[in-house]
Length: 147
Image 1 (cartoon, rainbow, N blue to C red):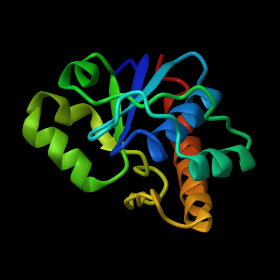
Image 2: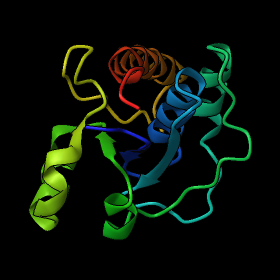
Image 3: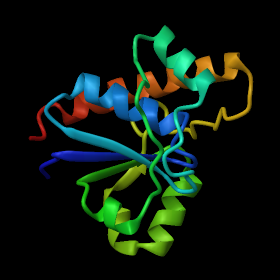
Image 4: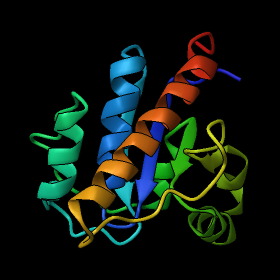
């Protein structure tokens, strides 16, 4: 299966999915990588604590603006990566045609949910950022030759 485009999904599209998007794009610049939230406040900037944690790991979330998930956005992508099993189930239930291309971001780095750090401590944001980077690294290994 050829992979040219990836969508990274979380809830608000202000903490986890923007970092997943930017981390994948840094590792796979030949791909189109974007993000969205299942309950996004359209146009919101990245959470300041998420942006700080990302910056500490060398990734900028500058100029990010939250975008609301739609089935059309998902259908236009070759691969959809979510943070939690419940998000995958929610997408698959509402849009069964997307289930075959929807996976956990952590699929190759342990397969656990990447918990939402929103309104949590800076330490939680840092821990989640490290999980997302590890997951992006693992996906990059698998996607490098898929074009």
